Image 1 (spheres, rainbow, N blue to C red):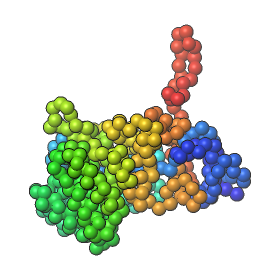
Image 2: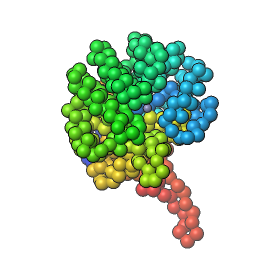
Image 3: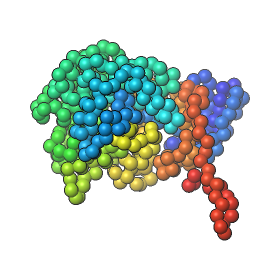
Image 4: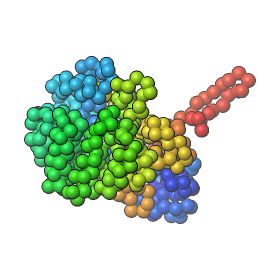
Length: 424
Ligand SMILES: [Zn+2]
């Protein structure tokens, strides 16, 4: 006897007509035409059923604050940081909690059930840390929220950042962040990486740094990040986020760099939505694309994810918690239009970020958590193309969100009345 069986699913790996049987909070069995009684059934015939979307790079403390206290006029990263600096003293803990919970609701509706969020620790009050620790606890039954202690104004450059980072970790923040390209000098950037990776080794924590988020071809902190990862034996536990300077680096240097990143098993998160708008602002034409070398990093065996980064905040005015937006933009910017390449873009918002976060029990196989999303799409490529609706979202075997399928009623002269199902 199963609690629930999802019938006729198409899986991300291409298997069709698969039944997924759930007992308690786990997948109990999986295969075509499964026999056995079920407490209830979901008909997913012809629909893609996938493990949930995962966002490996987000900022929950600034999200949904767009326009406060004003909008970003230049569209640059640096004006965004300055604007956030104006907003920070005006924040209250209650207001951060309210915005974060609202975003988590959106996320669940979109089948996004795990988020790694950076949290700025440069405000001595650590308001955002307390707020997001509270949110992490409140949402944990339906969403995994992992927090990164992020020294937004520079670990060495901002007064008290080093002490605040330790305080944030003591309070229970999960991961160590950094921003070496914002330190005063290249040498300070390298020193910040050394210090932060040292703390990670000491405390047994993961690292996720904003790294080389710049158009400067000489911004090469990722080399130091990979070196420190190897030196301290942190292989597989360190993530380089953004790495946009790699788009402008000399090709010969990159031919040496990528194997070094692979040796360190560095994880990579590109944030295509925001970086296609933030980068290249000092270019006239030709304008650079502002994203790291995603297909080349994947080809070298690195685990690469696409993150959302920001939604309606000082850096980015749009966004709906839809990871298919990030996959689509990444696919376009990286020109990953081959069939295999498009499927890798889907993996970059599902299983790759799950690996980066170190999520337990993620996947579609017996023994995995019954965390699943039923999409109005035939396969992963179709899902990206249509930003497919999430018909049902399950967490630990229970349906926690439903959306009606999209269907447009047409009544056209000479064509008659009919229903068109969402561009299929
Ligand atoms: Zn970020």
